[in-house]
Image (cartoon, rainbow, N blue to C red; front, side, top):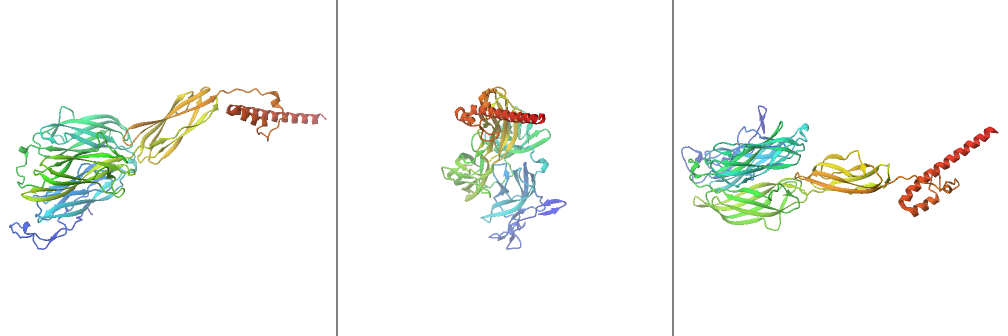
Length: 587
């Protein structure tokens, strides 16, 4: 990297290609030609000069761009560019691969719609662009190493809220130009602060693009607690003048002075009448793409250790049929897990005889997430290998697309049975203790505790505890004041929200006995000061007999009696000493 006028500038990290001759005959405007193309030494593709390093804020989404330049006019046909992002930076789209035609232009902007995890620290992170193309009829592949700047959160921003579109769907999945369709958005508060009065508005509407179909372009969410989510539905219409392609809509979520933006993509099948008249008439290699995918109806995340079914709609976007399609589905490798998903009950390789031009097929596979994987989004790679007849020639093509699947861990928040230190006599406080532990891999949110029951009062009936991280534990002391003698019972209810934003409750019951206080009548023979005791203040022999015969209730009465006997003996000794002193003074 270099710095120019105070800005970070990308330096070309790939060496510019050189050839065996001093001039590329195809680049010569005089129209010269040679039987074989020059030999390449180095890379043909590179990042444009003086390009700025794109940046993104931690915990937010953005569309970043890298200008990729070709060093030769000899590049023809489709050029595929696949981006590999750093850890904790995710794609907001289904595919990480884009296709360009460099025969008409020397430079294309590779735009990536991404999101950065809120835990990322400020710094510059590596991004790898893999370029696949043909040169002189031979398939080649190059890599371009570039960078992404992440702006981490400042300390005062820690714990702030974050509104994001975590999932969306288009119905129908592919929209015909001039037809109505619906978009469903799942908006989630991924931060730790609650939001009130949220306005969700669609942007990017235009007369010759997308328009609302009898509804307004914004909706209101009254409130979203930390971790909670809700789904909104919008009715739209596409213009008849739209050409085939993927179009984006902006989603702006505003609450007070806080505003967040996400993008969604709508695939449109245009009318032939609006095709570009200047487009090249030669056939291009058909492109297979993942049009949509699902991991369960209404499911926003899969659970570690539980098998789920991944379903993907694969469409041939070209004008030529493809055949002998081999599809391999595998978990994207990462440093922490080496891949979070593994096939369950089947092979991960599929064979498809053919897919017609514009046609689609649906493939499903059962996957098992690792039980110990950290909660976050993980990638699944779809590697395609297929054949097609292009310009009367058989062409073989390979391409890999990646989809992102959020993973959560099972809720394993546990509460122990309540220990009550009783029975007690009426007029005394009753104490108890209850403990809890989060054994799961995910944080639980907004934990609170409520004490309820009959026959007692307490200073705190409701207590807010807050978030409990994975592996954390704690306890709570109960202090109850009985209001009457007899049975005492109640409940302690723990309420919290799991990683999906669902509210859950755990109820623990307790009961004990409150005894009526009775002033005991002590027989005179038990007040004999000569009655033997084991030691001063100790338990008399008859007290131990009473314990054995009468149990717990008698024990309490005995303790009261013993205290009175000891006190009376001490008082008698003091009176005797006073009498002795008085007699001495009289003599």
